[in-house]
Structure formats: structure tokens, C-alpha cells
Image 1 (cartoon, helix red, strand yellow):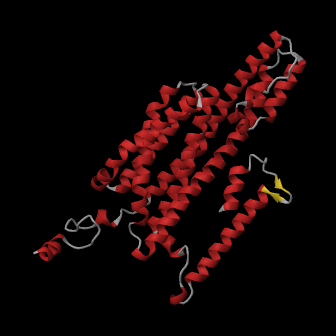
Image 2 (cartoon, one colour; image 1 turned 30 degrees about the vertical axis):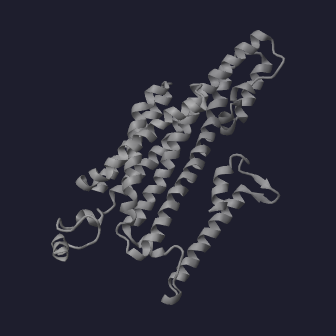
Image 3 (cartoon, helix red, strand yellow; image 1 turned 180 degrees about the horizontal axis):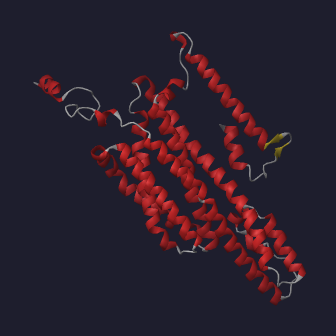
Amino acid sequence: MLAVSFGLLEGERYRWGTVAGPVTIPLLLALGVVFLAAFVVLQRGVGRAPRRARHPLVPLRLFADRNFALANAVMLCFGVAMAGLMLPLTLYLQAVRGLSPGEAGVVLAVASFASGVAAPFVDRIGERVGRKALLVLGLACYAAGLTVVAGRTGAGAGPGQFVPALVAAGVGIACVFVLMAKLAVGDLEPALTGAGSGVFNTTRQLGAVVGSAAVGALLQNRLGTALPRLAAQRADGLPHEARDALTGHFGRLTALDVHSGRAVTDALPSGLPPEVADKAGQVAAEVFRQGLTEALRETAVLPLAVSLAAVVCASALRPSRPETAAPEYVRSGTGIPVRAQRKRRD
């Protein structure tokens, strides 16, 4: 997990090449995959050992439970989808709209606030209408909010125009985090619930890692296409020196440069006449804003597609046992009929 996480998150920093000496990002990713495969083989061997020696860290029979396997798929997809909302929107608010990190954080906090407000009511509503149905609805709300954010980003919207979409996304987040754990481990036998909970939380974190890396890589790809094209189109009227500097700079620009604020400030060489520098600076700022906006809008296709995949996986879940149990059973999970409990008290 360390090798895979480091390779995915730091790959762009090292330009997917050498880290130090013979260690490269592709080598780390390959080693991570090999180690994970070896871990699965070892766990399978432990699971087949005599009962007195059968103590696997991750019992593979967990994934024989349909709800557990599907719930992990949903959380993996949702981790990618969450990164696909927060990372591009943060870049848009700071790099395009000019907000400070604190101001951008206030805008993004709308989703967290909506999630916190909705969370106490989600489980109660889920008991009435069904947790599975509410989960699917929550995932659909998140996907709708993500779609609106992508559309408004492309239209150059101001921060306040994202509030309704972020509220919808926050409600979706509340539905997923409140309901998924119960749907994932609710039907597992008691001996497996501890391991199941650990695997489920690890899958959620892995989704965030994969999502950040995938969204960052796609954003870099789209920036590498949009910025040089726009720079070549808009720099035609500039002197030769400024035009070459502009197109060369935007051809080398990375997502890390965008986030660090060096996207426009390093675009032009020093020593240009003031009138040329002003015009070139305006062109550079326009190219950057439009190119980043296009790249962010195109990047949103990935988390949106993954959100829809999460909806499909959630639709295949079975209702948990407490929902399908006869009304005479209490919802506390004891499995003792109400009449029997009354007799015991008497």
C-alpha cells in the first residue's frame, strides 16, 4: 500500500520517472502490485490452514458476501468521485476566481456543513424508506451536484453560484457515509465484523488516494493539450520573443505549477518593453484562465462516470437483514422477538 500510494500521489512531482537512484515511479507501482498479489496468496493459504492456525489478517471469505463486496466497490468509486469534486473546484476558486485559500475553504465547507446537518436524519429516514433506496438517492444527488459544478465552472461562475450544487453533494456524502457501513458489515457473521470494518475503511482511503492521483493525472493531460493550443492562438500579435516564451512556458506547465501560483508570473521573460509586457501579461492571464477552465470541465467527466458506476453498484445491493426482518423483531439487532423479551422481563 505504501508503494502504490506513494507512486500514485507523487508520480507527477517526479514526472513519472526517477525518484532516487534506481528507484522509479513505475518500479514502485509494479512492486506495490506484486506485494499486494503476494499478500492475497498468503492470506488464501492461511485461510485454508487447519482451523487452529487459521488467523488471516484479511479473511478472503469476506468478499463472498455480496453486500460486502459491492459496498467496497461503492466506497472505492465514491473516494475517486470526492477527489474529483474537491480538487478541481479548489483550483478553480483560487487560480481562476482569485480567492484566497481561506475563502475557497469557506465555499467548500458548504458541502461539509450540509453533510453534518443531514447526517442525523439519514439513518431514521433510511429505516422508513429503506437504506438501499436512500443510498442510491444520495449517490444520485452527489452526481447531480458534481454535474452542476462542472457546468458552472465552464461558464465562469462566481463562488456563490456553487452553493446549491455543494448542498446537494453534501447531502449525498451524508447518505453514503452514514448508510454504507451498515450495508457493508450488517450481514456479516460476528467473527468477521472486525476484519470487515478494517477492510471497508481501508478501501475508502484507497479510493481517495486513487481518486486524487487519477484526477491529477487527467487534469495534467488536459492542461497539456489546452494551454499550448490557446497560447499559440492568442499570442499571434505579440513580438517573437514574447510569443516563444509564452508558448514554451505553457507547454511545460504542470498542475503543481498551477497550484503554486507560478502559472502566469513565470510566463514571460524579463526585459520586455512595458507596453509589450502589459499586453503579453494580459494574454498569458487570459490563456491560463480559459485553459484551466476547459481542463477542469473535461476532467470532471472522470468523477462523474465513477459516480454513476457507484450508483449501479449500490443498486445491486440487497436490503440489510434488519430492514427485511418481520416487524415483531426489534431493531436493536438482538434477534429476540418483542413478545419473548416481554416474557423475560415478566
